[in-house]
Amino acid sequence: MSITAIQNKKKILIIDDNIQIHQDFKKVLLISTENKKDLDKLEEALLGESSNQQEETYLIDCAIQGEEGLKMVKESIKNENPYAVAFVDVRMPPGLDGIETISEIWKIYPDMQIVICTAYSDYSWQELFDKFGNNDNLLILKKPFDNIEVRQLAYTLSKKWELNKIANLKMNELEKIVEERTKELQERNEELDNFAHTVAHDLKNPLAVIISFAELLYDEYSELLEEEIKDYIKQIVHDSDKMNNIINDLILFASLRKIEINIGILNMSDIVVKAINSLSPMIEKNNAEITFPDTFPSVLGYASWVEQVWVNYISNAVKFGGEHSRIKLTVDTGKTDKVPEGMVRFCVRDNGPGISQKNQTRIFKKFERLDQVKIEGHGLGLSIVSRIIKKLGGQVGVESEIGKGSLFCFTLPVNGRSLNH
Image (tube, rainbow, N blue to C red; front, top):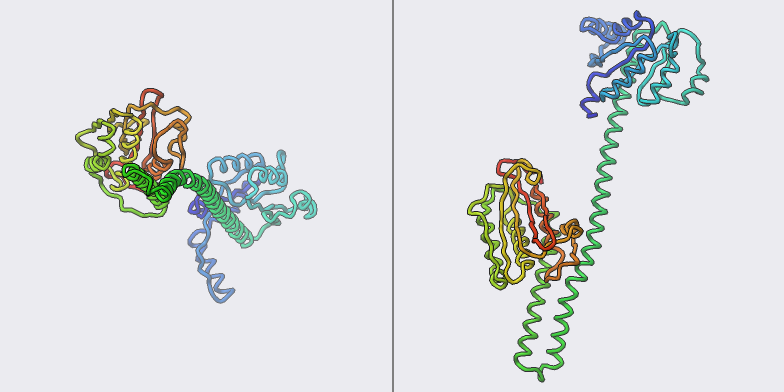
């Protein structure tokens, strides 16, 4: 229930077996414009001035028996439009009396403000206290009631109900925010743990190689052949580059949470060509063949990030494909379960060994390393892809079968669709 809905006309329920009482309540609470002017004049005559306050407006329903009133309360709750206040008569033979009716109402809706209306001493205050406890949602109105008193009770209790509902709504919103922040902090703590593991694993190995070859050069330089020295230096450079790439990926991964970018229309053909050109040495070394569409549809994104996604997908396809990788880039704009409305799906298909079902569920997780993959690299690439595409309003996915290659995909919004990032 929204704050606006809470602040709309308050619903008041009259439960009394005397229909004339229903009419009396309506006359008192549903004040006409003329009556309002008369009341302002009377207030001015008595108090020397008129408050000219905006009169509260109500929607009033009536029931002649407790059972009927209880049914109306249940229906109002079901329709998410509950009553704020109920005026309940004590004696309503032959069914539930007022006290029993109130007890049943509060079982299903304890927030309702209730006024007991009675001309008799059916129940003492001690008996009411024993029945309901020290409940501040309950007041007593003696018959015959005073019009001003009825209006005061209706106004005060409906305002109290309104403030309570708004306070509860705000509290629920606050609890939701706290829950989301707690979840986010837990995820970040888990991410930091995984980050530490990744750094320890992926940086320690190349660093150990660098140290080992550097010590060999330092201790045995005079005894080494020129070719051996070149090989050692080449290995040091290679592992230094590997460490540098890992560090750059870690910096990019961390910055994706904070950096704000300008979303624009992408020339996907140019982005794909740039990604392939940057991978030319690897593609040539593995004798890989790459095919892709002549044209791509217009989508929204951030060019440098999307290029990083293509680089990651294509480089993995080349690595997995062995000495003669056959890689196919595809695009799908069809409105299917795999391509939600307003999105375009881009995919990279390889002819590699495939990925097990178990590893498919882990592959995009932060800093995840697949046991079956025995290639150079580290567990950041697909985590970066996942975070990039999520921030651009899309999704990532993989389809694979052992021995039949893999299909890695991502979606982006079509040009014209608004983005929240």
